[in-house]
Image: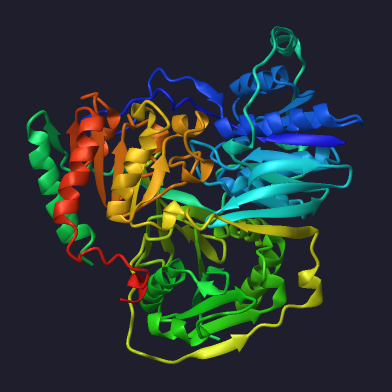
Length: 264
Length: 342
């Protein structure tokens, strides 16, 4: 059985603070991490491998700048067997379609994967589109918002969390699933895993290695174009109450709720 | 056939979800600027409402595929049928709800027919000269707004979260109903839906709530949520929770608010004992009125709050319960379920 895990390196937003004046994120000094939901994806693959009686091979794949190799090495330390870095200046500026195109072509090129796993969305782009787009480009089914997995030789059974409940689906291989954090608790790398991953040889692929037309690459190949970026003005006037003023604040809040929120 | 703005609607258990009317209303506004028609796509097994209901929100045509294959949601079938309809109808624009369904089907359609898709738009407009769809969405946790175009691909597609756009009801008008037959090959699928497990009758989807009371680690213990429930009963609210409380198993995952949980936008949001990690704020900051309670005067959550109460939540929440039950109890709490047709 062959499993591919699609990961992304993202800025570490966990200890990022907001600028009190502008309300924008203070990004200086924040490092990079593996997108948190992708850690759940890696863990899912590792658990499947551990449970299976037949041989199981995990390939972790990312598209990004050369330093995205650190995310791949971490994934190797967590239990992946092989890592592929898709890096090329011509990939830069890709939207979700153009990103999915590179990932899909790399999956076609490097294997016959039975199961492809990805995080539901990344904390930086927040589109959640790349997984289903990759699946569509590979003409395989895709299950999103997965919070439970059980599998056997022919298919995977997933529990999907949707708005008003859960859905259980059986999907035959090959297929792609995107996962939520409730699925599992990501493991920690072992010391040996860390040491080995540092020395591991990564497979690096560029646009020349993939069967993609040059006008389908990166910024140029992206159907969507960002035309304008604005920083929204902080619109809320924060009213602060502490100590003895709290009771007065609650009374005011009650009036506001009565007149504006509930009275419609 | 004239040009059209298409809406992929959401129908859950045979009931049209309000986001479908929100998107139809927006589609009408865009179509008027373009001189185009509004066409609705509806997939269902049974339908409680009449499909003609969409005409009173501005629809000119309703393409309805009524088939037993839509009884339980199967993303593969939805993708195939929607892609086929788009290729046949050639709309200029397709709008879809940014629900778990729309966010699964639409990217698969975009990958299938090779066009752009913008997720979670908060603003949609037509660029006067080019007639292109201007799609505005928050990026980097809502800290910047990006405006996006799809200049060279058709259709231009966008998903929109529920409650982003207002429902605009129009004078009763009429239009065309087009039944769409789902072919056997479209029904072929490698996905078998085994089971549908609705949320317990006691719990509701917090994304549908007008009021959410959310708790964080500042509650100090699991039982703290019992206190929040008192407030929730009073305000007919749903219970939200921060990621650390989910990880500590104080609450179940469907209650998690934030980027790794649910993104919510209620009329009123209470953040109680939540310091305001960027990921949490990105999941609730579009709420209309935000109230926070925290003992840390520098808590990030205060920066996105309308009402910020600095102090011990175990003093403040009971006081709120007391004052609210005096002042909010005389019949003003009509947050009934029919608001979408007002």
